Amino acid sequence: MSTTVTLDDDVALMLEQELRVREGTLNQTVNKLLREILEARRVSKNLNRFEVHSRALEQRSGFDYNSIPALLEQIEGRAHR
Image (cartoon, rainbow, N blue to C red; front, side, top):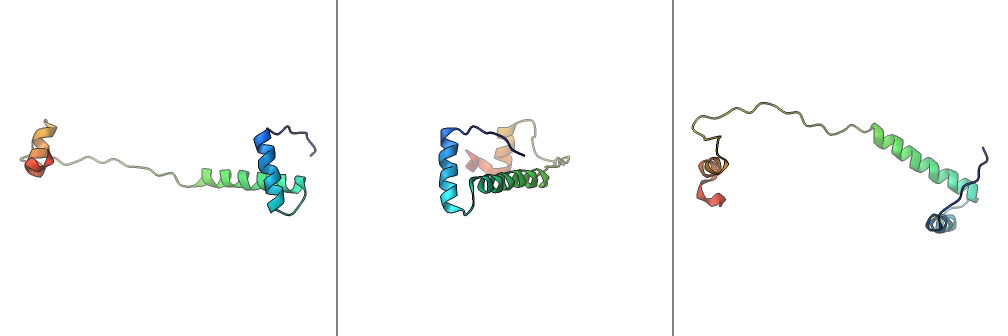
C-alpha cells in the first residue's frame, strides 16, 4: 500500500533520530515502528484486568458502626487522633 503522510515537526525529528539508530530505509523503519506500537497496544488490551470483588463484611459485636470516630477509638484507642 502506498500513501502520503504528513508528519508533525516533532515526529519527523524523532523519526530522523530513530533512522540513525536503526538500520534500514525510511519505509522499513516506519513499518517496524508501527508494528511495534500496534502489537504493544493489541497485547495490552488482552491483559487481564484487575478486578476487585466485594464481599459482605461481618459486624463484630461490641463495636459501634454508626460513628466512625467512636469505632476508631474502640479499635485503636486514643492513639488514632
